[in-house]
Image 1 (tube, rainbow, N blue to C red):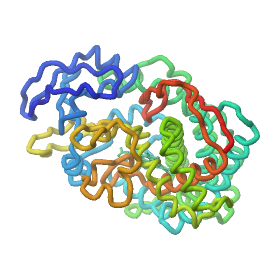
Image 2: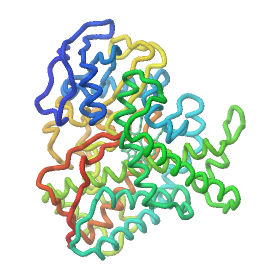
Image 3: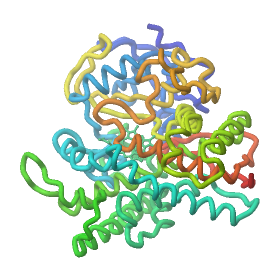
Image 4: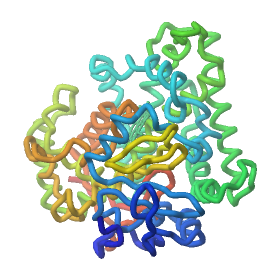
Length: 467
Ligand code: HEM
C-alpha cells in the first residue's frame, strides 16, 4: 500500500503534516510533526486529517509518540464500527471535549450505561412517534418563513436562522416547549462552548492533564453552567408538575436500569437533555445552512427543487402527507450532507487488541473515521467535489457500498435522530422555499471549519428574495 500518495484534489484548505513512512507492526506509518498537528488541531481539526486518506483506504499516522488510525474504506469502516463495535469506546478525547457539557449521556457513555440509556429513549424515535412530530416541525418552519417574509429583501445569517428554527423544534418535540428557555442565550452558549474545542483536542493529544487551562475556557465553562442550570429548571418543574406528556423528559423520568432497577439522577437526566438539545438541533441546522448555500450556487438544482415543492403541495400549505413525496428535495439534503457532513469525524479508542483489515490494532489506539474524507474519496465518488443530487436518486446508489455514505455514522452508535433529522430538514426546506429563495452574497463558497460540527468559517450571510 502506498500510503505516501496524497491527492491534489484534497478539499482541506491547509493539509496536515504527513511526512516519512515508518513501518511498525500495524502497517506503514506516516510520521507527523507534533507542532504542526497541534497547530492544525487548534485552527481547524480537519487540517490534522492526513491528506492521503482522501485517496487511500487506511492511513496510520504517528504523532506525539502515538499511532493513530484513519479509516476511509467502507468495508474497513464496517469491520471497525459494526463488527468490532464492542471493542471500541468513545475514548478520552471525546470525553475530554464533550464530557464537561454532556457528562455520561447517550452520546458520550459506553457499555452498559450507554445501552440502557439508548433503550430508555428508543420509543421517542419510532416511525409512529415521528409522524406525530411533523405538525410541530411544520409550525416552526412556518414561523421562520413568516419572519423572513416580513423582512422583505433583507439579509439573513442563514446558520443562525436555521439554529433558531431547529432549536424551536427540538425543544417543542422533546421537552414539550421547555417552559421559557432562553433560546438566544442557549444558542450563543453552545457556540461559546464549541469555539475552543480545537484546544481540548490539541491538549488531549499532548497528554496534558484535564485541568490544564486554555483560551476561551472561562467562557466555555460559564456557558455549560448556564445550559445545565436551564435544563435542571425544566426537570425540577416537570417533577413538581408531571403533566402526563409523553415526551423525552417523561421517558427519562420513568426509565429504570434493567440490571439494577435504579432510575436516573437529576445529573444524568441533565446529561441526556443536554445531549439531545445540542446533538439534536445544531447538526440539522448546519446541514440546512450548507444546503441553502449549495442551492444558491446551483440554479438548475434550485429550479428543480422549487418545481417539486410546487407540484407536490399545489401551492397549499405543506402537510405531513406531502413529506414522503418530496423525493428530490430529500436528495438535495443528502448530497449537501455528503459535501458538508455536519459531524465530519467519528472518533473511537480500542478497548482491547483487535484485527482490522489484516492489521493488529493494539488496545489504547485511537481510530478516526473522517466522514468528510469518505464523502470526498476519489475511489468512491466520481467528481467528488461536484454537487450532484442525482447521486441519491432512487436506485442510483445500488452499487455503492452501504458505508460509502454515512453522515449519521454506522453500527450500534448510529445517530438515533437520523430519521427525525431528515424529515425535519425536508419540511423546513419545503416550507421556506415554497415562498422564498436565498441568494448568496459572497462569490467564494464558505470555508468549512470543524468545531466538533462542521461550521462555516464566517457567518453565512444570504439575501432573501420573494418568489
Ligand atoms: C443532520 C443531522 C444530524 C447528523 C449529521 C447527525 C450525526 C450523528 C453522528 C455521525 C452520530 C454518531 C457519532 C459517533 O458514532 O460517534 C450521531 C449520534 C447521535 N445523534 Fe445525531 N445527527 C443529526 C441529528 C440528530 C438529531 C435530530 C438528534 C436527536 C433528536 C440526534 C441525536 C444523536 C444522539 C443522541 C447520538 C448518540 C447516539 C448513541 O451513541 O447511541 N442527532 N449523530
